[in-house]
Amino acid sequence: MKVLLINGSARRKGNTFVALNEIATQLQKHSIESEIAQIGAKPVRGCIACGQCIAKQLGRCTFNDDVCNEIAAKMADCDAVVIGSPVYYGQPTGQVLALQQRMLFSAGHLFRNKPAAAVCICRRGGASAAFQTLTMPFQMMNMPVVTSQYWNIAYGREEGEAARDTEGMQTMRTLADNMAFLLQRIHADGAPQYPEREEWQPMHFIR
Image 1 (cartoon, rainbow, N blue to C red):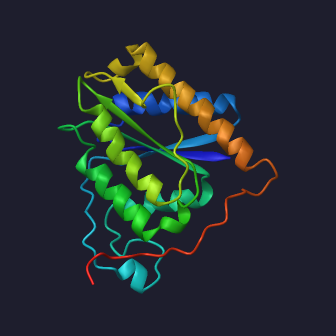
Image 2 (cartoon, rainbow, N blue to C red):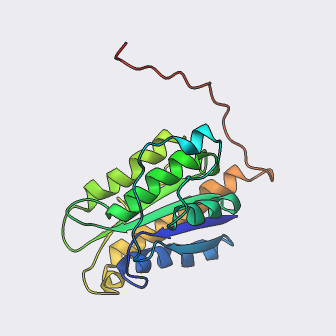
């Protein structure tokens, strides 16, 4: 089993990395592999609702000039995902929001049913709002949201400072323990076992 950890910070070794690395270390204790994918410092375009990914059945975003398709493709070999982000003005970074929205829309088949969690790092406030923003899309994809002993939040400003947030790091380890527990149950009989789903019945209120 393998978990993809997405670092939504432009700082490769910043506090978001510290939190994700704590999760990775704890997952390893459960014999679960992980990979930290860096979003990097280059721009990530937002979805423009062109619909080409659906119309052409691409299974990926039609635009291939940033990290979106590269990171989404990693989910073909992963059984769960954790998306981490620093907090900017009470929100996740614009890049990670664009990445999450495009990945789930254009490559949703790689994510659907797989356990997921969000992690947010902040200097002082806004983390709970950012955490909720990152968590909501998982629920639309039938992805079980993995919990912890608290919201998956850690505090720190300077690079590496989050490692001193003892409760925050414990929250990350508990998240990893819960992720491992759920994955082990899903894969108990070898191939993953997911619930049967009703066919989607969309309804628009404007007729």
